[in-house]
Length: 372
Image (cartoon, rainbow, N blue to C red; front, top):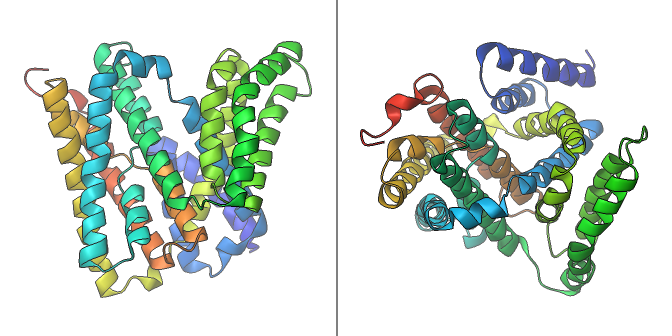
Protein backbone atom coordinates (compact mmCIF):
# COMPACT_ATOMS: atom_id res chain seq x y z
CA UNK A 1 0.00 0.00 0.00
CA UNK A 2 1.17 3.53 -0.74
CA UNK A 3 2.86 5.05 2.37
CA UNK A 4 0.86 8.28 1.96
CA UNK A 5 -2.42 6.34 2.18
CA UNK A 6 -1.17 4.57 5.30
CA UNK A 7 -0.31 7.88 6.97
CA UNK A 8 -3.70 9.39 6.03
CA UNK A 9 -5.57 6.38 7.42
CA UNK A 10 -3.54 6.44 10.65
CA UNK A 11 -4.30 10.13 11.16
CA UNK A 12 -8.02 9.40 11.09
CA UNK A 13 -7.77 6.20 13.14
CA UNK A 14 -5.71 7.72 15.97
CA UNK A 15 -8.24 10.53 16.42
CA UNK A 16 -11.09 8.04 16.67
CA UNK A 17 -9.24 5.78 19.12
CA UNK A 18 -8.24 8.72 21.31
CA UNK A 19 -11.82 9.97 21.48
CA UNK A 20 -13.19 6.52 22.35
CA UNK A 21 -10.77 5.84 25.20
CA UNK A 22 -10.69 9.44 26.43
CA UNK A 23 -6.92 9.83 25.96
CA UNK A 24 -4.79 12.58 24.48
CA UNK A 25 -4.88 12.37 20.70
CA UNK A 26 -1.37 13.85 20.53
CA UNK A 27 0.08 10.96 22.54
CA UNK A 28 -1.84 8.49 20.37
CA UNK A 29 -0.42 10.15 17.24
CA UNK A 30 3.13 10.03 18.59
CA UNK A 31 2.78 6.32 19.43
CA UNK A 32 1.30 5.68 15.98
CA UNK A 33 4.22 7.55 14.42
CA UNK A 34 6.72 5.46 16.38
CA UNK A 35 5.00 2.28 15.15
CA UNK A 36 4.98 3.52 11.54
CA UNK A 37 8.66 4.43 11.75
CA UNK A 38 9.47 0.98 13.12
CA UNK A 39 7.56 -1.03 10.49
CA UNK A 40 8.04 1.24 7.45
CA UNK A 41 11.58 2.38 6.83
CA UNK A 42 12.06 5.99 5.61
CA UNK A 43 8.33 6.78 5.93
CA UNK A 44 9.30 10.01 7.72
CA UNK A 45 10.87 11.25 4.47
CA UNK A 46 7.48 11.80 2.78
CA UNK A 47 7.63 15.40 1.57
CA UNK A 48 4.01 16.32 2.26
CA UNK A 49 4.25 14.94 5.80
CA UNK A 50 7.44 16.89 6.44
CA UNK A 51 5.96 20.12 5.03
CA UNK A 52 2.72 19.91 7.01
CA UNK A 53 4.68 18.87 10.09
CA UNK A 54 6.82 21.99 9.85
CA UNK A 55 3.68 24.11 9.54
CA UNK A 56 2.25 22.24 12.51
CA UNK A 57 5.27 23.21 14.63
CA UNK A 58 4.82 26.89 13.73
CA UNK A 59 1.06 26.69 14.27
CA UNK A 60 1.42 25.15 17.72
CA UNK A 61 3.96 27.74 18.81
CA UNK A 62 1.74 30.49 17.36
CA UNK A 63 -1.27 29.27 19.36
CA UNK A 64 0.90 28.82 22.45
CA UNK A 65 1.49 32.56 22.32
CA UNK A 66 -2.30 33.06 22.37
CA UNK A 67 -2.50 31.22 25.71
CA UNK A 68 -0.32 33.77 27.51
CA UNK A 69 -2.66 36.14 29.34
CA UNK A 70 -0.66 39.16 30.51
CA UNK A 71 -3.56 40.46 32.63
CA UNK A 72 -3.82 37.12 34.41
CA UNK A 73 -0.11 37.15 35.15
CA UNK A 74 -0.41 40.63 36.65
CA UNK A 75 -3.04 39.46 39.12
CA UNK A 76 -1.35 36.26 40.24
CA UNK A 77 2.24 37.06 39.39
CA UNK A 78 3.80 36.31 42.78
CA UNK A 79 2.51 32.75 43.17
CA UNK A 80 2.47 32.02 39.43
CA UNK A 81 6.03 33.22 38.93
CA UNK A 82 7.38 31.37 41.95
CA UNK A 83 5.71 28.07 41.05
CA UNK A 84 6.61 28.44 37.37
CA UNK A 85 10.28 29.12 38.07
CA UNK A 86 10.55 26.19 40.50
CA UNK A 87 8.63 23.87 38.16
CA UNK A 88 11.11 24.56 35.34
CA UNK A 89 14.41 25.19 37.11
CA UNK A 90 14.43 22.19 39.46
CA UNK A 91 14.08 19.46 36.80
CA UNK A 92 16.10 21.44 34.26
CA UNK A 93 19.06 21.77 36.64
CA UNK A 94 18.98 18.10 37.65
CA UNK A 95 18.65 16.80 34.09
CA UNK A 96 21.43 19.09 32.84
CA UNK A 97 23.84 17.96 35.57
CA UNK A 98 23.18 14.28 34.91
CA UNK A 99 23.36 14.64 31.10
CA UNK A 100 26.55 16.70 31.19
CA UNK A 101 28.54 15.23 34.06
CA UNK A 102 27.25 11.65 34.24
CA UNK A 103 26.41 10.85 30.61
CA UNK A 104 29.17 13.12 29.23
CA UNK A 105 27.03 15.08 26.75
CA UNK A 106 28.26 18.48 25.49
CA UNK A 107 26.86 21.44 27.42
CA UNK A 108 24.65 22.59 24.53
CA UNK A 109 23.12 19.14 24.00
CA UNK A 110 22.63 18.66 27.75
CA UNK A 111 20.91 22.05 28.00
CA UNK A 112 18.55 21.30 25.12
CA UNK A 113 17.63 17.92 26.58
CA UNK A 114 17.03 19.59 29.95
CA UNK A 115 14.70 22.16 28.37
CA UNK A 116 12.81 19.54 26.35
CA UNK A 117 12.18 17.32 29.38
CA UNK A 118 11.32 20.13 31.83
CA UNK A 119 8.45 21.85 30.02
CA UNK A 120 4.75 21.79 30.90
CA UNK A 121 1.89 21.56 28.41
CA UNK A 122 -0.14 24.74 28.88
CA UNK A 123 -2.95 23.36 26.72
CA UNK A 124 -3.33 20.18 28.79
CA UNK A 125 -3.16 22.11 32.06
CA UNK A 126 -5.90 24.40 30.73
CA UNK A 127 -8.03 21.41 29.76
CA UNK A 128 -7.62 19.74 33.18
CA UNK A 129 -8.55 22.95 35.03
CA UNK A 130 -11.56 23.43 32.79
CA UNK A 131 -12.79 19.91 33.57
CA UNK A 132 -12.48 20.58 37.30
CA UNK A 133 -14.26 23.92 37.01
CA UNK A 134 -11.31 25.83 38.51
CA UNK A 135 -10.70 28.35 35.75
CA UNK A 136 -12.92 31.04 37.29
CA UNK A 137 -11.33 30.64 40.72
CA UNK A 138 -8.16 32.31 41.95
CA UNK A 139 -6.56 28.88 42.31
CA UNK A 140 -7.20 28.03 38.66
CA UNK A 141 -5.86 31.38 37.50
CA UNK A 142 -2.71 30.88 39.58
CA UNK A 143 -2.11 27.40 38.20
CA UNK A 144 -2.67 28.53 34.62
CA UNK A 145 -0.42 31.53 35.20
CA UNK A 146 2.32 29.24 36.53
CA UNK A 147 2.04 27.01 33.44
CA UNK A 148 2.32 30.15 31.31
CA UNK A 149 5.49 31.16 33.15
CA UNK A 150 6.99 27.72 32.44
CA UNK A 151 6.18 28.09 28.74
CA UNK A 152 7.59 31.61 28.46
CA UNK A 153 10.79 30.76 30.35
CA UNK A 154 11.22 27.58 28.29
CA UNK A 155 10.88 29.55 25.08
CA UNK A 156 13.30 32.20 26.34
CA UNK A 157 15.84 29.51 27.30
CA UNK A 158 15.52 27.87 23.88
CA UNK A 159 15.97 31.23 22.14
CA UNK A 160 19.16 31.89 24.10
CA UNK A 161 20.47 28.41 23.34
CA UNK A 162 19.78 28.58 19.60
CA UNK A 163 20.63 32.23 19.03
CA UNK A 164 23.70 32.86 16.94
CA UNK A 165 24.49 36.53 17.11
CA UNK A 166 25.57 37.93 13.77
CA UNK A 167 24.40 39.87 10.74
CA UNK A 168 21.45 37.49 10.32
CA UNK A 169 20.25 38.20 13.83
CA UNK A 170 20.54 41.95 13.21
CA UNK A 171 18.46 41.67 10.03
CA UNK A 172 15.76 39.69 11.85
CA UNK A 173 15.63 42.17 14.72
CA UNK A 174 15.47 45.19 12.38
CA UNK A 175 12.41 43.67 10.73
CA UNK A 176 10.89 42.11 13.85
CA UNK A 177 10.97 45.10 16.22
CA UNK A 178 8.94 47.44 13.93
CA UNK A 179 6.64 44.49 13.20
CA UNK A 180 5.97 44.00 16.91
CA UNK A 181 4.64 47.53 17.22
CA UNK A 182 2.81 47.54 13.89
CA UNK A 183 1.18 44.11 13.72
CA UNK A 184 -1.69 44.67 16.16
CA UNK A 185 -2.78 47.85 14.36
CA UNK A 186 -2.50 46.29 10.91
CA UNK A 187 -4.27 43.14 12.09
CA UNK A 188 -7.07 45.11 13.77
CA UNK A 189 -7.67 47.11 10.57
CA UNK A 190 -7.77 43.98 8.38
CA UNK A 191 -10.03 42.13 10.80
CA UNK A 192 -12.41 45.07 11.05
CA UNK A 193 -12.55 45.86 7.33
CA UNK A 194 -12.84 42.29 6.01
CA UNK A 195 -14.80 40.69 8.83
CA UNK A 196 -17.00 37.87 7.54
CA UNK A 197 -15.46 37.90 4.06
CA UNK A 198 -16.00 34.68 2.13
CA UNK A 199 -12.32 34.61 1.12
CA UNK A 200 -11.28 34.44 4.82
CA UNK A 201 -8.75 37.26 4.43
CA UNK A 202 -8.18 37.51 8.19
CA UNK A 203 -7.19 33.86 8.36
CA UNK A 204 -5.00 34.17 5.28
CA UNK A 205 -3.28 37.19 6.83
CA UNK A 206 -2.33 35.20 9.94
CA UNK A 207 -1.10 32.20 7.96
CA UNK A 208 0.95 34.29 5.52
CA UNK A 209 2.42 36.30 8.39
CA UNK A 210 3.41 33.14 10.22
CA UNK A 211 4.95 31.45 7.19
CA UNK A 212 6.72 34.59 5.96
CA UNK A 213 8.37 35.35 9.30
CA UNK A 214 9.33 31.71 9.72
CA UNK A 215 10.85 31.62 6.22
CA UNK A 216 12.81 34.81 6.83
CA UNK A 217 14.33 33.65 10.09
CA UNK A 218 15.18 30.25 8.62
CA UNK A 219 16.98 31.86 5.68
CA UNK A 220 19.00 34.51 7.52
CA UNK A 221 19.55 32.58 10.76
CA UNK A 222 20.06 33.89 14.27
CA UNK A 223 16.59 33.14 15.68
CA UNK A 224 14.65 29.92 15.19
CA UNK A 225 11.25 30.16 13.43
CA UNK A 226 9.51 28.50 16.40
CA UNK A 227 10.61 31.36 18.64
CA UNK A 228 9.29 33.92 16.15
CA UNK A 229 5.98 32.05 15.83
CA UNK A 230 5.52 32.15 19.62
CA UNK A 231 6.36 35.88 19.73
CA UNK A 232 3.89 36.71 16.94
CA UNK A 233 1.19 34.69 18.68
CA UNK A 234 1.82 36.63 21.88
CA UNK A 235 1.65 39.94 20.00
CA UNK A 236 -1.50 39.12 18.05
CA UNK A 237 -3.40 37.42 20.90
CA UNK A 238 -5.45 40.46 21.93
CA UNK A 239 -6.50 41.29 18.37
CA UNK A 240 -7.47 37.71 17.48
CA UNK A 241 -9.38 37.15 20.74
CA UNK A 242 -11.73 40.00 19.79
CA UNK A 243 -12.68 38.00 16.69
CA UNK A 244 -13.54 34.63 18.15
CA UNK A 245 -14.64 33.12 14.87
CA UNK A 246 -11.19 33.67 13.34
CA UNK A 247 -9.48 32.06 16.32
CA UNK A 248 -11.83 29.08 16.13
CA UNK A 249 -11.08 28.58 12.43
CA UNK A 250 -7.34 28.88 13.02
CA UNK A 251 -7.48 26.35 15.85
CA UNK A 252 -9.50 24.01 13.65
CA UNK A 253 -6.81 24.14 10.94
CA UNK A 254 -3.95 23.65 13.38
CA UNK A 255 -5.49 20.99 15.64
CA UNK A 256 -7.51 19.32 12.90
CA UNK A 257 -4.66 18.84 10.40
CA UNK A 258 -1.31 20.50 11.05
CA UNK A 259 -0.72 19.48 14.68
CA UNK A 260 -1.69 15.79 14.14
CA UNK A 261 0.76 15.57 11.23
CA UNK A 262 3.45 17.23 13.38
CA UNK A 263 2.96 14.74 16.23
CA UNK A 264 2.80 11.79 13.84
CA UNK A 265 5.95 12.93 12.05
CA UNK A 266 7.69 13.51 15.38
CA UNK A 267 6.95 9.90 16.33
CA UNK A 268 8.17 8.62 12.97
CA UNK A 269 11.60 10.08 13.69
CA UNK A 270 11.99 8.01 16.85
CA UNK A 271 14.36 5.19 15.90
CA UNK A 272 13.84 2.34 18.38
CA UNK A 273 16.64 0.36 16.74
CA UNK A 274 19.13 2.88 18.18
CA UNK A 275 18.08 2.11 21.75
CA UNK A 276 20.98 0.05 23.06
CA UNK A 277 21.15 -1.13 26.66
CA UNK A 278 23.17 1.98 27.58
CA UNK A 279 20.62 4.30 25.98
CA UNK A 280 17.76 2.43 27.65
CA UNK A 281 19.49 3.00 30.99
CA UNK A 282 19.82 6.70 30.15
CA UNK A 283 16.14 6.82 29.21
CA UNK A 284 15.04 5.16 32.47
CA UNK A 285 17.28 7.45 34.52
CA UNK A 286 16.06 10.60 32.80
CA UNK A 287 12.42 9.52 33.05
CA UNK A 288 12.69 9.09 36.80
CA UNK A 289 14.56 12.39 37.12
CA UNK A 290 12.14 14.31 34.88
CA UNK A 291 9.02 13.06 36.67
CA UNK A 292 10.45 13.15 40.19
CA UNK A 293 12.11 16.56 40.01
CA UNK A 294 9.15 18.11 38.17
CA UNK A 295 6.80 16.82 40.85
CA UNK A 296 9.07 17.90 43.69
CA UNK A 297 9.80 21.41 42.39
CA UNK A 298 6.16 22.14 41.57
CA UNK A 299 4.68 20.59 44.73
CA UNK A 300 7.08 22.31 47.14
CA UNK A 301 6.54 25.69 45.52
CA UNK A 302 2.75 25.20 45.54
CA UNK A 303 2.82 24.19 49.21
CA UNK A 304 4.83 27.27 50.13
CA UNK A 305 3.06 29.86 47.97
CA UNK A 306 -0.61 28.79 47.97
CA UNK A 307 -0.71 26.30 50.83
CA UNK A 308 -2.72 23.49 49.22
CA UNK A 309 -3.15 21.18 46.21
CA UNK A 310 0.59 20.50 46.09
CA UNK A 311 0.21 16.84 45.06
CA UNK A 312 -2.35 17.71 42.40
CA UNK A 313 -0.16 20.42 40.89
CA UNK A 314 2.96 18.23 41.04
CA UNK A 315 1.22 15.60 38.93
CA UNK A 316 -0.56 18.08 36.67
CA UNK A 317 2.64 19.86 35.67
CA UNK A 318 4.15 16.56 34.51
CA UNK A 319 2.11 16.99 31.34
CA UNK A 320 4.72 17.61 28.65
CA UNK A 321 3.72 17.76 25.04
CA UNK A 322 3.94 20.25 22.16
CA UNK A 323 6.77 22.48 23.35
CA UNK A 324 8.91 19.60 24.58
CA UNK A 325 8.51 17.85 21.22
CA UNK A 326 9.15 21.12 19.39
CA UNK A 327 12.35 21.60 21.39
CA UNK A 328 13.54 18.09 20.51
CA UNK A 329 12.66 18.61 16.84
CA UNK A 330 14.50 21.92 16.70
CA UNK A 331 17.52 20.39 18.42
CA UNK A 332 17.66 17.50 15.95
CA UNK A 333 17.34 19.77 12.92
CA UNK A 334 20.01 22.10 14.29
CA UNK A 335 22.42 19.23 14.87
CA UNK A 336 22.62 19.90 18.61
CA UNK A 337 21.36 16.44 19.56
CA UNK A 338 21.56 13.07 17.84
CA UNK A 339 18.68 10.89 16.69
CA UNK A 340 19.20 8.69 19.75
CA UNK A 341 18.97 11.67 22.11
CA UNK A 342 15.91 12.91 20.22
CA UNK A 343 14.28 9.50 20.70
CA UNK A 344 15.02 9.62 24.44
CA UNK A 345 13.38 13.03 24.82
CA UNK A 346 10.21 11.94 23.00
CA UNK A 347 9.97 8.68 24.94
CA UNK A 348 10.33 10.58 28.23
CA UNK A 349 7.62 13.05 27.16
CA UNK A 350 5.21 10.28 26.17
CA UNK A 351 5.85 8.08 29.22
CA UNK A 352 5.68 10.96 31.71
CA UNK A 353 2.34 12.06 30.25
CA UNK A 354 0.77 8.81 31.45
CA UNK A 355 1.18 9.87 35.10
CA UNK A 356 -1.29 12.79 35.10
CA UNK A 357 -3.45 11.11 32.48
CA UNK A 358 -3.99 8.07 34.72
CA UNK A 359 -4.14 9.68 38.16
CA UNK A 360 -5.99 12.90 37.37
CA UNK A 361 -8.58 11.68 34.87
CA UNK A 362 -11.15 10.13 37.18
CA UNK A 363 -10.34 11.23 40.73
CA UNK A 364 -8.73 14.66 40.67
CA UNK A 365 -10.22 15.80 43.97
CA UNK A 366 -8.76 12.87 45.92
CA UNK A 367 -5.29 14.15 45.09
CA UNK A 368 -5.86 17.50 46.74
CA UNK A 369 -4.26 18.15 50.10
CA UNK A 370 -6.53 17.87 53.16
CA UNK A 371 -6.56 21.60 53.77
CA UNK A 372 -7.52 22.40 50.18
